[in-house]
Image 1: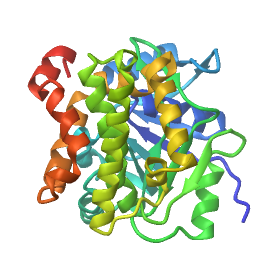
Image 2: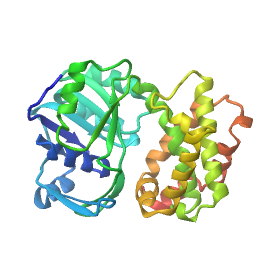
Image 3: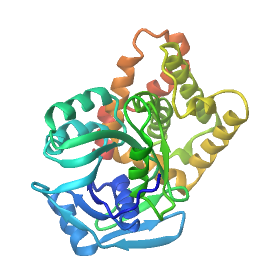
Image 4: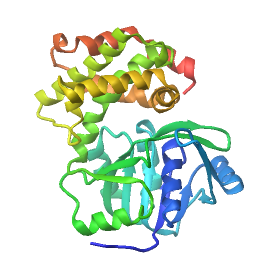
Length: 328
């Protein structure tokens, strides 16, 4: 089904992930409005959205319309790009949105609760999806450094059940003409619950190595890999399967060998530093909240089956110390 038209789109959140999403939506010809805090909104209006795409060795500049309030404005779609620990505090703003589609982008370990809150308190929101964009980087004073593979992509879908063909076509039309990929998932609830199984061990080892995985040893990276394997086995034991199939990368076979190689590249390259370590250094609060959730989530599961996971956690600095070190 072909659906093509210029969409009126809101992006709430102008961090590293949100910035690249704004760039892609603008590149596709949408009418994009950015909702941001006053200082960031002023910078975007004054300087434009300036992104250095590290792997692609190029700089882009987009003229954007940034605001601090969207009262009285209606959108075809609104993307909320918030770290996990800030999402709940941002929901009162979301409740006032007038949009045909709301897409909540990022880590979210209580998606059912968030979905219910929006449904109950946001009469102007018609449909709700959840998404996760694969990109990273660094935010600077008046610009961004973006780390991505090819055009990047978003895993997206409804909390439970597949999106219909028309909804898919309308969503994909917002990215028409770009290299940005859309991967449809039928169960974003399970997807979001599984995601920390892969990212938390990376965070643990990053913090052990002083925020620099280039200092990691081969044995430490093996422990990181094994920790993710243990977490996926835990999820399997309680009946949760990763809709993305990422758990296959943490088992014996070609996929597991590939993931170990990718871990080596991630640990030894500037690209890996920007994608993984930079996020860990700048998102201590988010990682802490995800860790606290998973600690409770795994309660009752035999410790003998989480030896690598617990080994990493014991060796990293305390969250209090990490907040002191990285200031967030």
